[in-house]
Length: 327
Image: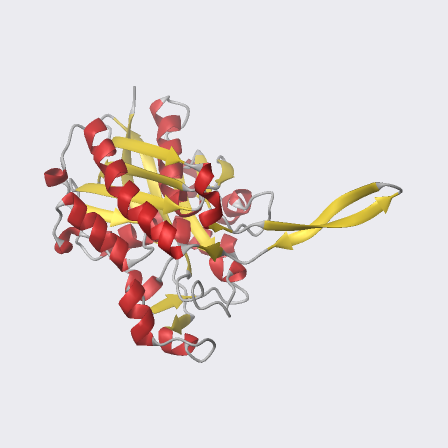
């Protein structure tokens, strides 16, 4: 049975920055208040002409370039997103934009856990021999669905896209994983559709409406994350026959610096092993892990042979961990 190797990473470059000081002109907040509670100093926002497809394509193209793989060689494109340009899916648009003419493409939605879920899903296609080369993209434009007058949520979110290239290999570098869901906690974090009845004919009515802005119970999500994330990482490590002492880098969903610090402490990992770019990017949902990973790789911090523990957590509620060997 073939194994999985991760051979390239990439991310999109967004030029529009929104600082905490900028936000303080919109809502009653301050740089000090936001940074002390979240670790965020700024976030990137997609410009009006920057679609999710554009961002996802740029990230994928950069990952393919690092991997030295042509778009024509790609068999599958998995796009993890909760904010597509089209509710029917945006992966096929990315396929065309990339020129990946042989690739099957589809979206996968698991919110902030989306990248980890997509990574594990892609690996199964490779392990079964169905596909040899897969591009996994995490991309979200949460600014579309943020209430910019709600200071409890608008300070958290940013836009972005990151990607990795997976290829079939003799040695399997997806060492272990664990995925979890608990729908009973869905109310703690959602972006819900709000239907309105519209009379169609006679007694027949249909639903017409739109999606409401993001709502979140921050206290409950924090409690959920600091309890569940260390647990799921330890389970994934157990499946990989590894321990926390084997981890070279901890790359978590970039939701809140306090969560990162708490998880690292629970696992007994020093701060210098924790990858954090939250101060510059904020919470970019499914994009946060691949962006953080790509930056660490390009900075020369993550090297071939390093053991990386990833974990995503968020709406659903969903959470999951994947232990990977880079390169």
